[in-house]
Image 1 (tube, helix red, strand yellow):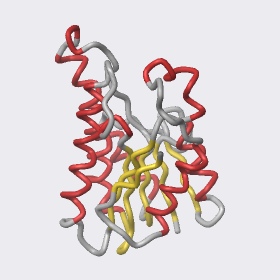
Image 2 (cartoon, rainbow, N blue to C red; image 1 turned 90 degrees about the vertical axis):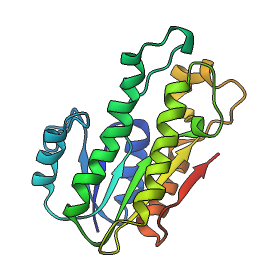
Image 3 (spheres, rainbow, N blue to C red; image 1 turned 90 degrees about the horizontal axis):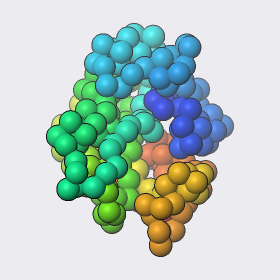
Length: 199
């Protein structure tokens, strides 16, 4: 299969590329890519990406920013960081990408553990992750031509603890390679409308 991984240079993205490349042709897209650059906050950038890829069999999104901060100090502009980036960026990938997928293709999005287990300063991430999962459930019954959609909801990464450990005290961290297996399950499996949790 021909698989597009958006966010291929991040910790999860690299692990997903490594896992999927064993069986599939993987197109690696990211903001910093020379061959397949994309800014998920810009619909035109996403459209240009799909023009470059042509028809594909799967889309994997391991990308998206949110705002971490105290709710008592948060502004609407800060809250919209997660909405405009991680949520709408992934939604836009689906809205445009569905017509570029071959019949029976798949889409895999990324949410995160904060949708289930909130943390201090994580209200934006909790809201965005829940919204992504809700979108997956709703989209799964409307996608045409046998196209499937799922999401991966993982705990904090072992590789990210240097940055995020203070936010996730008491959480079990998971290695990116194990998280990548959930994406592989979505791409190579047959299910749709599923949230694959990695703890």
